[in-house]
Length: 178
Image (tube, rainbow, N blue to C red; front, side, top):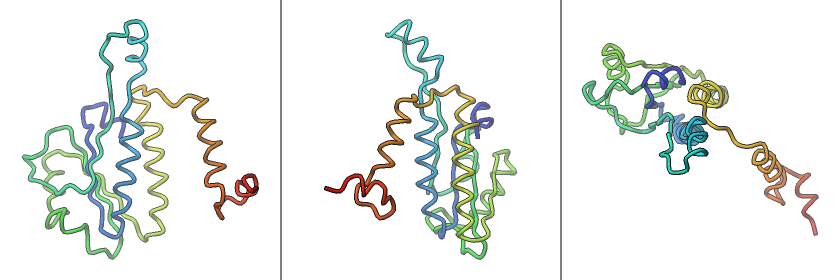
């Protein structure tokens, strides 16, 4: 993802089978929140000159968009097709015969990444794949400023103690009893 973005392909369109459709908004949010940041060089420049305009970088994820004709896309797009074995395909709102449309886009020079998921349980591996792809390569190419150590520590503390009465976190529930 980072290599594509560094070479100008900073829009990532997801085409996901309907049984896995809930993955789309999650990965879209992950990528947008993790890569849509100000660069370190920009922060340093603005520290010296507060009036300087910040440089923002990021990958623009797109989920649930109907596929258009080849002419609708510039050279800034990468397509990701996630299929589930035995699926009827994406929601009809994505358009008809999306795999043929993606083949046309690939023939026209657009990168098309195809990921086959054998069962719904295997979707768990996709969460890890996209977290790693977003956290390391996609963010490091742009020198995106990571969260400060203080913020990470505070987030961990809050996550461990919330919600206070959660059956998933009995240790936190014990700490918050009256």
